[in-house]
Amino acid sequence: MRHVVCPVGELPAGERRIVNIGKRSIGVFHVGDRFYAVRNRCPHQGGPLCVGHILGNAVADVPGAAAVSNNPLRIACPWHGWEYDLATGQSFLGPSDPGVKSYAVALEPGGALVAEVGEQQVKLVPGPYTAETFEVKVEDDYVVLEV
Image (cartoon, rainbow, N blue to C red):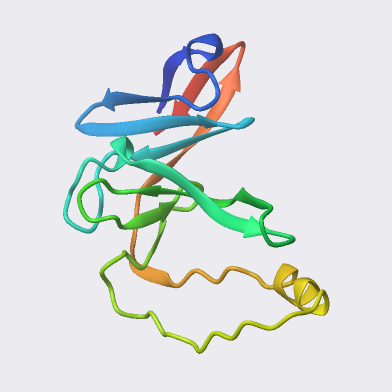
């Protein structure tokens, strides 16, 4: 079933719109040049997922030059902080969940260490939940949700 959400111009980049289709509440997000749609119900405990913050990973090629990566983009549930990939719905461990390991830290001089830090990848640990996602298209200047 297709549902017209709104004209594209009414959902600018960085904005979201929550629509009700039947008994489902669905959040439609315009992030950068892409659209995402996620059910507005956190699988963890039923919180209003789509009013949460959109997150990326903090990355830096060199110290002091941090940026936010949009791969993967996640939404954090406002109730308990569970994070879900906007594209796939895959959950990641929440802020109070086990799985964190501590490591020794040392301060060492030298520019050679900068190259090592820039090559590290952020590893997200998949959690047990998956949020329901939906396909979103732009047709004739309208945002269209596939339900």
